[in-house]
Length: 432
Image 1 (cartoon, rainbow, N blue to C red):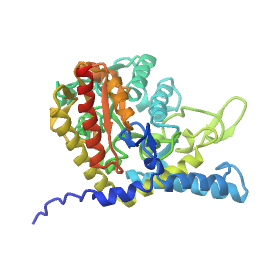
Image 2 (cartoon, rainbow, N blue to C red):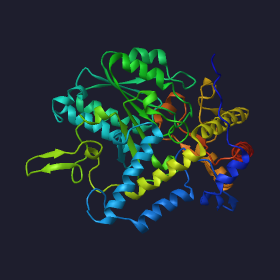
Image 3 (cartoon, rainbow, N blue to C red):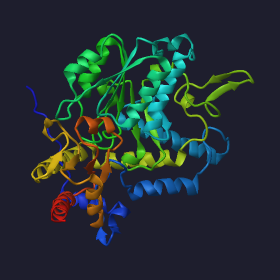
Image 4 (cartoon, rainbow, N blue to C red):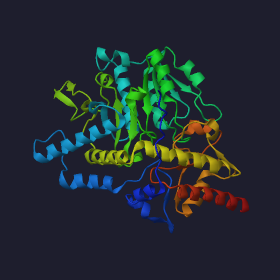
């Protein structure tokens, strides 16, 4: 007998209000109004647990990790590695498959430059499978954040490989029929976002991975907009690499991570070189530590990693399935109400795919900066511009958009306040 899947319960209004007490910035005012923060897709806010974790590390055990033999250094190293373990467990990886970076952009570049170094003959014969050259192809999509596009442009330029781009249909959905053609025998790497930072849609990663597996291509997943909002299991998704940023998931800035399959990290040549990632050094050559330390040159982001671990535990305590359910409700509400306003076009609204609590829109005759400024005057923080996704905006026929993005601490009343503000904006400019 089969059992029907149980939809996780969303967060109740009372639970959200209780959670909001953990975020001191949400108690502030902007321009004389209570802050309505709807820009979590860019940077999320931090609860006391995260702020306290970083401060406690700095005041009780601040020391360099993996270096000193004294007690403080040992304690710092232990909590640093505990943080790695916490993040690994959060995304379904092993501890030694997590590499600390400054942000997701650095993580993508780490992979791109490591492949460049392998292509230049570094890494020995084990790295042969990573080498790119003329005739090889890198495949990405038309909806990518610039951080998951430009590094591949540069890798193609350095190696002579060709960059191919999966296009979108008129509603902003990936053209999977074209993807099946582009991810062919010459494809060596496929780089795709899990959730679009403009459209909010959850891409069919499993289908993209299946196409890549048929031809032996590697897959890198941009999880910046999924790790904070959805249950994420890199093993279940069967990706080879995944990148994320701490500041989008209740953590501090200056910390991100790369997940890489152990067998790949073991054959990848390093990107940054220097101290802390070596075993033996002479004046003419060096031998490198095994991963992940091989990719962590120099003084590490210790207090930030500790704070990110606190953020991970906070999210786990709330429950990622419940956060996802809450955001799915807000996302649907966003699209429904925005689409009902005359003159508003929600980007990607008609594709009928699952989404997180994020939507971008264009207002006929009004620049997104003007919309954002009008809302900001009322204390409502949203994102305006091209959101580091110019090719996507160009494909959809706009130069910029206004983006509303929610999180676990966002209430429906806040979403309604922003949508009502959009309607007032349109009325104001029409009258003007």
